[in-house]
Length: 456
Image 1 (cartoon, rainbow, N blue to C red):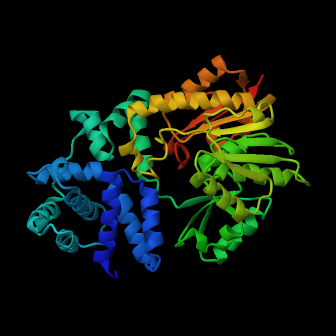
Image 2 (tube, helix red, strand yellow):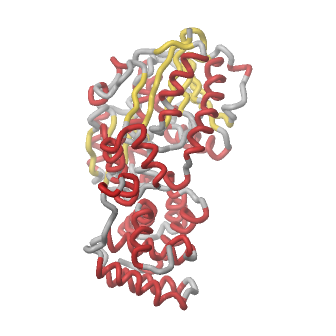
């Protein structure tokens, strides 16, 4: 691999910024790759996997390092901690890299970062781990599920306790296994008003991209074997939208007959807006239906605009708007409100692994209260008989099922039956006709929640 030291040095910057400075992993990786666009495809892949894997397996790595080092991980300098975590991840999970190379490169990194006095420490810890990697004693289930699952699945203990209390130990392990298997390629949805899914499938294959049809939707695929999404012709032509299949579900179960006014209240980056825009175009001959797509900051609104411009939908207006602030001019004007609300994100840990380190149990409670304030505004924007689509990318009961009960008790809504519009592969998991809690092990998707209501 070309210039491995620089690749690892770049990865170390990302790992330290995410684990010690609060940066978001997906943005940090993206920004680094944008800054170094000259990297070859294999170097980009190595860099991405090294960053994401080291972050994802940090709990496991810390347990191992603490087993071999007199200085515990929490007491280490962030750079040394990052170098060791990166080294342990490579030793345990990247067979393509010889352990000797891992140790040598770690020592070079310590030198490069002006920690020459600690290079012997770094070398000694990693070489000991390398020699004993097949003999490491991990916590066993019989000694306590929480500690066992925390290390086995590299998950903070509070999340293990929270999930096992809500889902039981057996289901919790399946959820955690789903998170660790989340590298399934990129999920995309076809804009059917632009091109037929079969045509898009052939376009992607012709460009040398590996394409698999979705088991849930006949207009969605999983794609792999490409470098940048912006290299794909179908993406640049607006034929496809990056969107997880669980997220596609929100637009799929909505009733769109044409002519509706839709407000997407927390829309960035715009996947659900584009889906609604596409469905309107697919059933309309004119431009009767309109979508107001909004989010809190200019940066988020700009992300939506980028998608609107790329796809070419002329039935979308994008504005910067705070969903917590009521807009009088929207009162009783919307046929549909899409409320994909801010949440703890505990359903997408498989793709955004740093969420598990940033989120707290207190966040779940405070976010559920924010959701309720936004839902109060959303209810007032809808016309009588209008649809509310409420969704989150979490699997926390307080933000999902509990809020369904709150909506029915406090807002002028009744349940909408979405069971008949639910894909066959998911219908069996419904415990109520009006909502579904998707867990990561159900259909190889993100964890997601979708509920639908009709305004009385």
